[in-house]
Image (cartoon, rainbow, N blue to C red; front, top):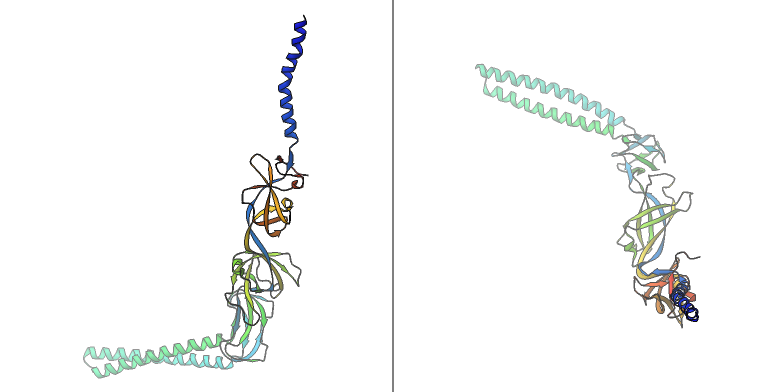
Length: 360
């Protein structure tokens, strides 16, 4: 009876021992410090390059009359949208109309002469075929027909020129455009090819900037640009850098940079408007970690590295640059290493940590 009483507590202790070990392990696991674990990544170091400029049409046209004369009518004004072939202005056409009438009369006379010469040539050929004519008469008639036909062709050419001269007294739009400037007025004498209108095509807008020269400015080609109008109230726009001048302007030391504005047609309210642009230019690369990972070690910076067994060690690093919410390092760690972000202030070398799923 006494043996039974002695064995019972021993059996209870044997059963309780493994439960105690399991409970201790669970307790230790539950007491591991939960921290934010972040993988270090290789990222470009971007500089926000600020630009200021104006909005222009992608393509602009200066249009003038092909001949000189006095302006008698101007049919459009600045801001008007015009269609292909639409009349814009007219010159006085008295001389051209008279020349056209003369050319038409000359053509009618030349046509009549050519018909008569053809009939005479046919008669001479027929007489020679019947043996009652001479070769000399036939040859003369053929020569007269050839000269009459030449005169007819010249008269037709003169008529074409006279008609074009009359047509050229009317200035017409070459395509669908918007008038941006008018440089003529009724009564004004204009010369051939003198600009009468400035116009913008409707296939898009671009922002033109005079940017300060920068050694990495060429890297901006094709980059996205954030655009904001300065003197008119318009929603923010975006575009891409399409052209960077290879030469520096010797007068002001700037480089011309063009940005195609996305989804924008020519709008007279935007043409000439002042605009600000922001473009990110990659100037270097660095190892990106959250700013919460940054610690101090002596006079330098350091971060906590998480080893394979989830213990931490403090590693000195070199700071390259700061960006929003991140620190870019140039030395000390490699991409792919795990660093501690939030919670790093509670660590000491060798402490074990576990990843926090959701940090407060």
